[in-house]
Image (cartoon, rainbow, N blue to C red; front, side, top):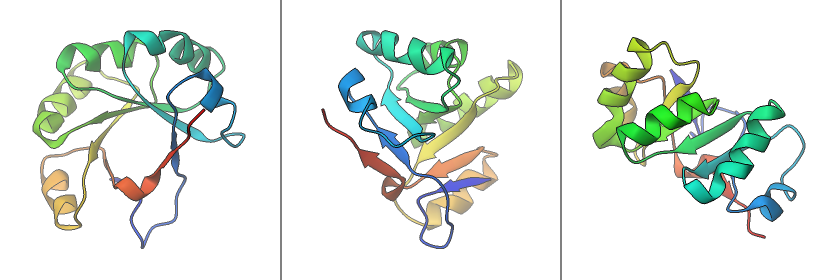
Length: 130
């Protein structure tokens, strides 16, 4: 299981961007996070075509499928969608890993029992504004 943002585990942060200007303020080779939105398609295409690892936050199954088709490395969902998203990812052999937003350590075990690829604490996300 991937665990991002836990105090025991050192790993890369995700830089949450909101537009193309904020993308330029991120460090080289950083992981990018943005919410799926039609207005972000140009940024998503840029990230994918330049092989930049990025995570897309999605809110429903349709967005989940778009995220996979658009080349997201990570698809970030809320807990209510976690098991369904993981099942779809396994059924369709997504290259992307399913990550779930969590806030408490006790949720790690719950997500592990559901077979979720990974968890994402808020501490793993750095917001970048333009």
